[in-house]
Length: 225
Image 1 (cartoon, rainbow, N blue to C red):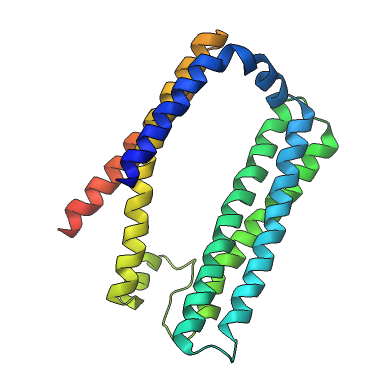
Image 2 (cartoon, rainbow, N blue to C red):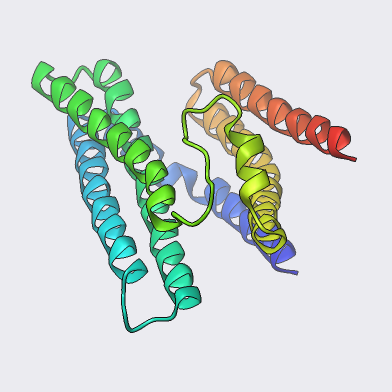
């Protein structure tokens, strides 16, 4: 039911996008091609890198809270670990976006250097965050992130309930991806049609990404059955 509601919301957003495009397209285009937009992306990347670090410390703190029993410690620390990962994802993609837009927006050199620094911080925090799982669950024989057979060892170390939780999250993400990618294709097409700017390359890339995601999913499921 919630995915039907999500699909309805997407349809409403696309409709609003079409009906109001003439009101905001020039404003948005000018904003996205400005140096201030790159500064905004850099700032968001840096802020969320710091937020992810705070969540990592909170995860360790609650994992060692003497007032909680072991199962409550695990539950609370994992929630903080999940919040940390959300912040890491936001930090990484905003930092990467800022670096990619430096040349497109003719941004000054100092901003390009700052973008590289923030991206390096985001990447460091991302790998630091991945490595925290071993600190939070030392009783589990979890593999190192850089091991070649990381996936197989991780699955072997999980309980049945943990595997169900992870696979449920992955499947939900897969379903949402299959809603968002076609919607993205439609929005990019409409925007390109309205502005007269060629969007063929962007459409081809997104379509290719959608094909790869779905093919990998189907091949993986087929192997496991």
